[in-house]
Image (cartoon, rainbow, N blue to C red):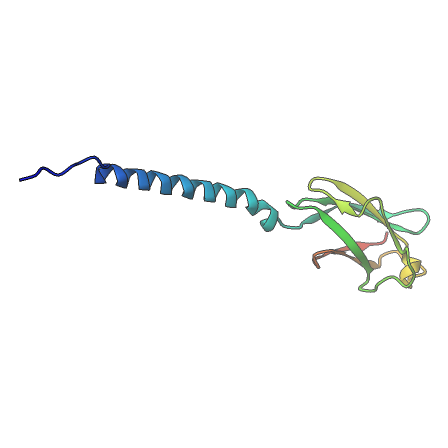
Amino acid sequence: MSVPNNKGIAPSLVSILLIAISVTIAVAVVMWVYALLPAYTGYEEISIVSYGFLPDKKIYVTVKNTGSRPVTITNVLLNKKAQEEQSGWVLSQSHINPGEEVTITIDPSKFGINHLFSGVSYEITLETSLGNKFTVVIRAS
């Protein structure tokens, strides 16, 4: 009778190696997905920090990006109306990174409002490049 030639790797060792390689690949894939996740799951959020009326009959609104992704304000509505003329609102910068504050100056006359009356409420809506709308209602004093 001949004795078999056992020069291969033991089956139990092969199983352990396959499991170790599979776990290593799985951990690498999970880490890669978690690295990509914030770029696709960030959210836009802006908060109104302050607002008021300027002596030249303009309105100012200071906003802060409290979200996790940059916000770009693309349009401002006053009482649900878009501006009649270009430059109805001025933004110190259009791209707002998380944690940053910017002040928007709004000229009501460019929206067809020639006088701001005391006690009257004005609705300001900020639209972003992602289509989100943020609204604040302010009352003239």
